[in-house]
Amino acid sequence: MDDETVIEISDVWKIFGARPEVALRAIREEGLTKAEVLAKHNAVVGVADVSLSVKRGEIFCIMGLSGSGKSTLVRHFNRLLEPTAGKIEIEGTDVMALGPKDLQTFRNRKIGMVFQNFALMPHRSVLDNVAMPLEIRQVAKNERMRQAAAILDIVELGAWGAKFAHELSGGMQQRVGLARALAANPDVLLMDEPFSALDPLIRRQLQDEFIRLSKILKKTTVFITHDLDEAVRIGDRIAIMRDGKLVQMGTAEEIVMHPADDYVADFVAGISRLKVVHAHAVMQPIDAHVAAHGPIDADAPRVGAQETLSTLINLAIDTDSAVLVQDGGQDVGVITRKDLLRTVIEGTEVS
Picture 1: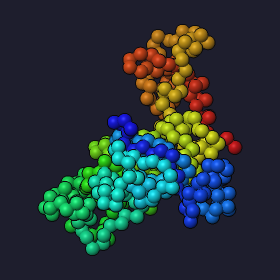
Picture 2 (picture 1 turned 45 degrees about the vertical axis):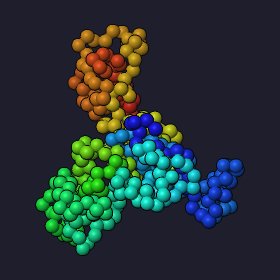
Picture 3 (picture 1 turned 60 degrees about the horizontal axis):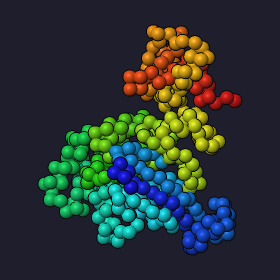
Picture 4 (picture 1 turned 90 degrees about the vertical axis):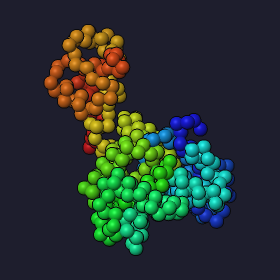
């Protein structure tokens, strides 16, 4: 594990049933499918041979439909579930090697968790709820209240510390849940569909709030969602799961432009490419363009390699020239109207 890797998951399996090891051996030796494992061994494959790594400070989204294994997988990171096989390392710690006491300390100090259910204590004030992780650590009361108040200010709920959960809206309660997870200053945040119970407008506001906080706090985050739009909006990278398996992993642009199979292609078919695809993914080599079409206009507009497809289309409306793409001050590619049209059409469902 290098210095930039915080989470390393290797060959993780989770099989539910009376004899999971027997079922796993049958899968490896006989190549049984998920349905065959259920029929022959009365066992359910929750996670199937998943390996992934998460870099320091990134928001890593794991997504899939209900039953895909995404929530089951994330519960292995802090051993809320014990894997049938595989290795889990967080910040260089072999999580599977921890005894009960060390595991409790590890969970309390290294990992913060935010669930779909806000799980706030109704008899405690907002401030007391946020201070709970510090209370478990036996931090002195004045100090834990000071730290909790500081976190509430960060999530813009400083004026609500004396209130109780039932006095807050759903969106505000979830912000308290996030503040509670942050209060212990964990290295890793695990967020399991934290915004899915909220209505669309509040959900988008919470996404904006989370993006803002992430830029400030730079926490390594594993974010579980079934909503591709949400994953594209907040994730630095995305892993798509199906039937317990990791089907594809990459940036939103990589997945949208190069889906691994028909399942992923169908999954991303409805996503607008306008904000996801960037100039570097659309451009063609300058030499090839010049060979086919002749010299490029000396006054051709130039854009950065990370310029969005939306901006490129607006630029193409105002100029007949090809557009040059620059990286590090050098011209590295060229984009024509045909390139833009092809990119848009390939991202459109055709009936």
